[in-house]
Length: 303
Figure 1 (cartoon, rainbow, N blue to C red):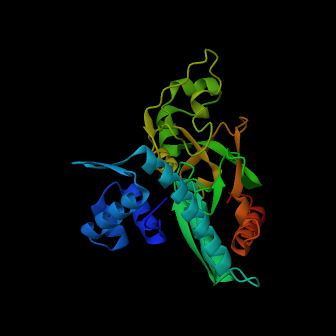
Figure 2: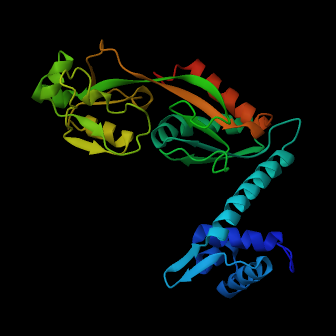
Figure 3: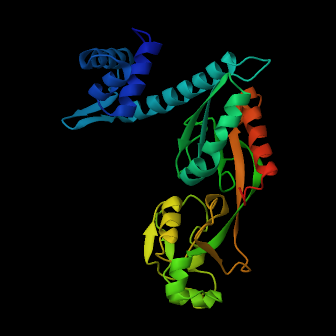
């Protein structure tokens, strides 16, 4: 590369524009005017002697060269953020921000109420809780650590098995009074089922109730499908049908009946995962220990 150097400020502006897709939105993020952002991008393109964006009336699209640069810049800034966090952390005690991600239902129902205990024990640590039923990319620092309801799919992540998540079948006393209580899995064919409806379920085999005991291999249809385990439980409580939800969700069994309790239920393995670079982070280790202790003190299936 000749001429002007590819300095950090221009790369930071470029990355913001590439992620936002427009000068205006990037300017809002960076607290710069649209014209200032545009000038920085033009200067970078001039320095590199390549176009980085195709400019259209509806926004900006990265060129092939722009895509290549953004991949590298994204990785560099992710590594810098991780290094900055590690340098800021005291060797004696955990400190700094910890970005934690997990599924929406587990985060709201089980994890969030327990964070008070963790934060009280570690006053120099702050937590950002990112609830998402899809897996955030830990390698790209979308989060620092994750609690996953399946084995990690990325080979470069450190993993710690936390336990099993099991489900039970529930119905309201109101529903069973009106429709009868299933005495066998075959009886489920004649009941209204509440199922999870989404292409990206928060746990594997979330709709096992639709398939259990079906000899012809075709799943049962649900009277209602909803992309929230919490909403499923609300509908079950309201007498709309029979459904299976993870045990951690059902902390109050008032008005509910455990249907077919003797039936063997599938289990999901739960893992605590984080990037190799954070193996020696004090914040990560104390949060891992907090999770393990919280789960062992009160079995997660019943908590």
